[in-house]
Image 1: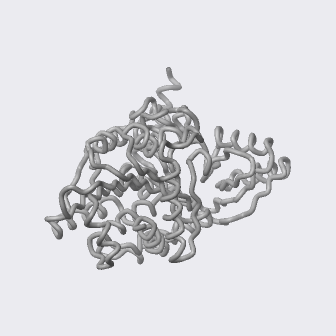
Image 2: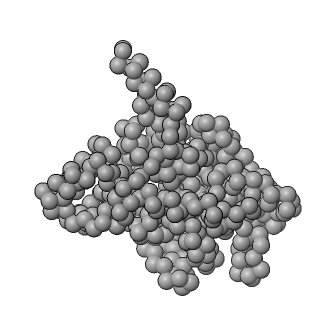
Image 3: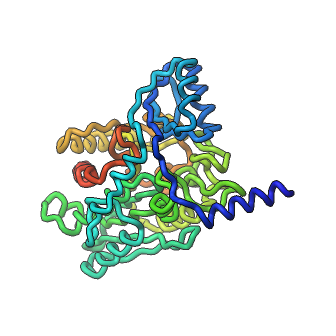
Length: 401
């Protein structure tokens, strides 16, 4: 009982005086998984990290993972690197320098834009300004509040009645900043571009934009820990949050998700335990004209199709892959950025309980994709703001096809 009270006191004290996490001299290594023994080692570290952080999960031999090594684990990492003959290449010598470059105050302008990453309030204020500027086209949406009481806001863009609908989901994973920036840039283009191809899709579909679907987590990445991924619900005495992209009620906890509350892939106590996913799914289910669902993540340069729990093919797999292949080919034309396409479980790893699986499996939405945006890991989640517009431009190119 005394231990429980002490732990609770520590947790409460930490919540009130939390300082911003720094990653001075944290190193990022790219590791090639070559043997079953190496895979078992990396999976054990993932389960009991003691300061290590994976930017992508060790799931099978023949793949690469990015491992963040804190200063106090350098000796340990050197030992296991030699013992297990890990092929590890230093990619980032000081992660904090990368984070500092990403958030330079000089990048942020008085007016909203895409030369910097903006916080939730600024994004929402910009959405409100669109409603005021385009009252006959843009409608405000607010599907409810997050665990910490922040609104989950979006907008609908509709030029005429009778259109089929496209849904755009951003920042369900808090640290994937470029996903929300891409969603807002595409929204802006659909309203302001004079390009006939953009106008054609803008005016012949209804568009639902939710750039920040995990506002608590996203704010936490700005105020406290840039590497935070989950929601901010109280998942245990010591740990907060669930992975909102493992929390959907379709093949919940069928692989690639954790039952450990402190894990980055903790699926939650039950399907839709997180108020954010529950409210988002309730709203999506009301859209009877939904034809396409696009979720945005980073990083890896992939276009993923359901499902995450199995390699079995969709009912319209051939059509989905054919359209997706055209999309990534078009995406490559502008800057030469190469994407791969495939089923989630095949292309990256088994990951059950995701939003696109629920949208496809429960709602039977015809076309459902998840973009894993730039890059291939050089910057990972800390993508420089200079790459926001190029990322968004090539992504819109792929949507127009």
